[in-house]
Length: 276
Image (cartoon, rainbow, N blue to C red; front, side, top):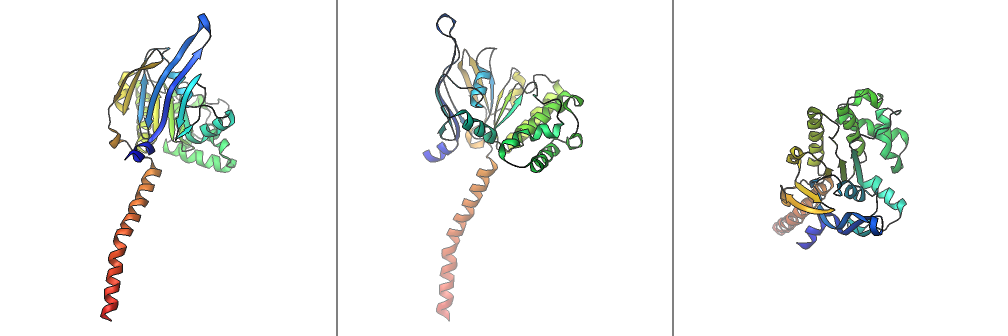
């Protein structure tokens, strides 16, 4: 039982501290911060400005380092690994969605979406084909060669989501993804994230909008670099499983069924031989 629980843990943060300055100017964005995140969670992080939300997201996304503490990702302590290794890990496992879209304005959206795949080693043709297939999911394939400024804010954010998932990352980090959108566009973006989460992706999202917490399986409120409240709205048993886990479980179930049925077939075969 303990093994199954540990297999479901994706991220563990232990005693994470992020300090700025020294002496009289010393301040803490995070202080002795502990958090365990399981696969398939959709976590929304809320709290006042300056409470450490974005710092936490940047450390989880390997864009920043903690001053001290442990960051365990898939069972490996990644807090102290080299910057190059962190970059490779980030490209493989983590997708980012930002409030300001962060699209390159002089690149067509097809090439914007394909950018994360540069680090995978695939050739340009393969990268563009994969980006095109991802844009199709968001009904933006006909705008592949538009520049970002030719799209609405909602469309640009959907392009940013496509860019975040094009490499099939395990974790999606979203920093105020609806902050610059109207209510209609916000709803469309959240429905896309809901769909992605339903496929088993783990999503960690920072927001100031309490109305969006209906999409979350867990809501964390932060205060002064620590967790103030932590409320689960969906039990761990009901979290969506990643496709890879479903396939693995299916294969295991099929194998166990095969083992269960083989002895019966064998016994029937032996009986038939006796009759002859």
